[in-house]
Image (cartoon, rainbow, N blue to C red; front, side, top):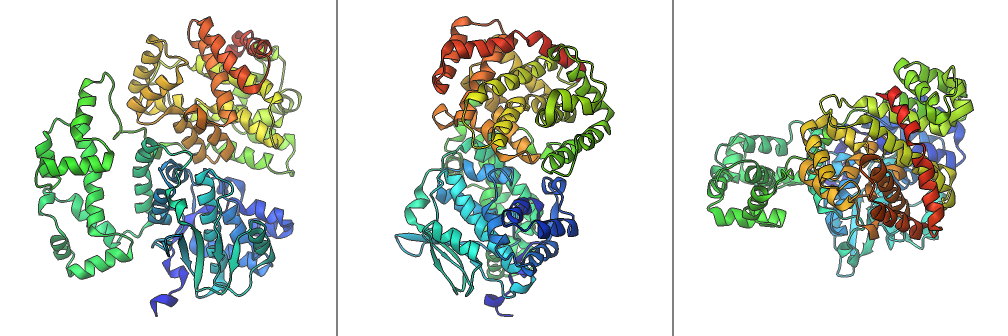
Length: 640
């Protein structure tokens, strides 16, 4: 078969993440295809729980899903589903892309890691056709009758969405979009023409053409530290999605088995694999790699660990990694990390804190999303369930039921006598607050913090709940597009410091050191100092850890996006992130330390200025919750 006519399906990996299809429900609803939507979701068992999970679907099933859409005259479903993907939908992959420096860096990484969400081989190509424009291309499937056409339409939509979202610029759209077909569904044409995008048809492939200057555009949320921390996670995902017996994986295996990289070369590896050098080069190129890239990446992954975690002299490290001398190694190291190995060593030796750049918190070991919560979210998103249905789901977990009723009967709610969950929901909490409390309770249950007694769980719960209750009051005077957006802001407040549970569970001794440092040095609300310490001890900022966990659990994007922004410089934070930071800090002063009235007044004044509200009104709202801290603290007795 001619290479140019190879079916796209043959280039696909055997499975793709089910999260790709998460927006499909909303797309079919938007196009008034509710009957088709329900039939499709029943036929393929695409319930909300599955769509929030880390499950992967076989390609045959995905193509069958899109074939079903096309058979039922919803040919636009693929493109709009891709275009409707949300920030954070792909977890660490999204966060990694947005943390890179420029759009050019982001696109290169998108191409390299494309198989994490789509294909085994590099379908995406990036070319700069002239000095004014660059072009992104995807191949045309040779057979569009099996759902491949809609699948590729979805990939095109994802590309447009990715560039727009990660740039932080809503108006960053391509100048030209080309399709390999003669006709397009009307909704696709209307979307593109309304955005003043030129449409070209009957091209040999899919094409997106952007101005060349876009490549140099600095990303809004660039964060080199986060990019460095997430790269190993993406590399692991890449390996998982690739065939077990690719040439790339076999070369990496041989590199890992070598005791002396100075003796390893293209010639020796080709001999080991019983093939010629030219064949090896060609096969690696077919997989989007080269020998020089693989050996450089392998050396880089080991260099930082050896420099920071051992006392091996630098000249010996250079020899181990196959460099001719120490100078050559130091030059390569500085190119990788922007700092010399000697400077890194000096920082490690002179600092009182461990430098865990090469040992970040293990995001791979995040627990799965609480099952009861996922089912509850699915119920709350549907009109087909009653309060009694939700109560029955919660009561299926006796521990959860006991804790929820314990909150209901606490002093904060006036020692209400609530006999069952149904009454608690209808008389006291309501559906939104029930969901929020269930998630908080379940998140507490997901982490074993018994090895870190230094973390006071009662104070943790008191602070989270006080912040949550205060945000609910303050948010009434803020502007939100929808009620759902406001309610998700509440959820951000309740969960923003879940990273403390993560750290206490995964690294109890480090967590003890962290809490001791910030308390003994009166850094409770010094956000900048706390985040610096978090980076040094855990290799990642706490709020970023929370955001990654919630994305992993499938929590709506605007929840973990707000929390992640709390780690940014103030001028890069959204209004929600700034408000949540100030409110959280105010209660941390009161709950965790002897309040410094001058510093607290500064926090409240900042909050007042930010919201254009009277200082006394803001203070009254904060103090109203502070007066209930004892009662809120009583809830913790039923929680832990």
